[in-house]
Image (cartoon, rainbow, N blue to C red; front, top):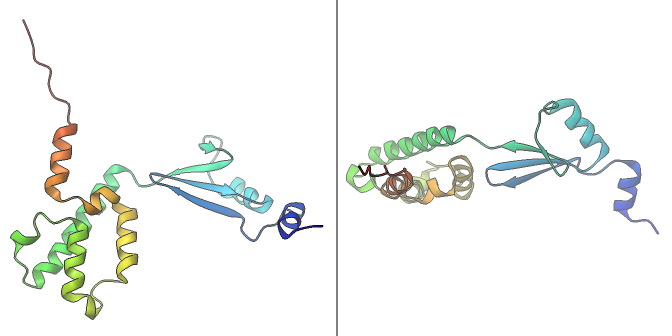
Length: 155
């Protein structure tokens, strides 16, 4: 007796040729059919391309790109809230997520933001979960704690 998946394996065809796996800072492009493997061979990378378990490894944005994206997203949200006459002191130490919530509460009914859950998910994917939820003061504290401390010089 043959199942659907057996016929896909025998023919080399699959309803899906590639599977894209999100592993946080890395993405894997995994071929699941002969045509998927052929497409990867023809269109992705070269002999120096990093692979893992038959999948092509792709890095997400670099840290600098994430920092730039975070700064632009935060700047845009703060500017929009200031147009609604929200006091700057109230938003200075809000996380991006808090800014998005406040903006949604103030203007979401007039489609000021896109579909809210999709907007949150997209921004989280771009800038990272920590950057979405951490307040600027928490991010500064983390940066200070992670910086190497100078060793005392003893003579």
